[in-house]
Length: 204
Image 1 (cartoon, rainbow, N blue to C red):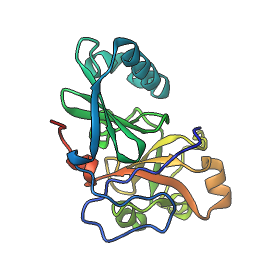
Image 2: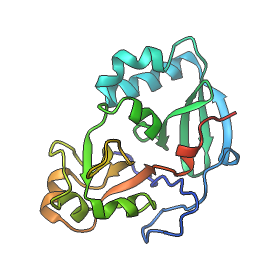
Image 3: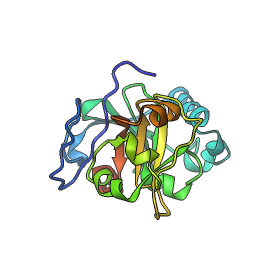
């Protein structure tokens, strides 16, 4: 979908560093924000439309979520990460010009807006350490795939026996390929519970 994709990492206190390229294990803090700009109305419309196109179920809620009259801030962070911030609260993020993804806190408020995969119980601790999601963790008895999900797409990562998403990922292959190939990384782990973005409630 976009050529310069860099997996997003905001780990805090983790000793687990996945052996995959382009991973940056830096703690996310406000100090990593290199600039914040209130965007023009035309840019705000473009961002709103991009989010509406990616998540059609959110469109009726966007006026409440991203009010046209409220200042919309884009905070630029290290490693080409952009945060969409309203009232000092990060709501969406993307990498370079990639698709916007909701923060987990927002996803927990509106759980039905994203396609979902589910990992088995054995994968939970690795996902929560920042590891990417391996195909066998999605194809096992406790896992589940939405067969409509294509490669290079945002997806919510659920977990066997858990109510809420524990991560947001970006697929490296389609759900059908994950099932048929059943080895290697199926989904890049972009943002997970208790990482730095989760703990960043406000950008002041």
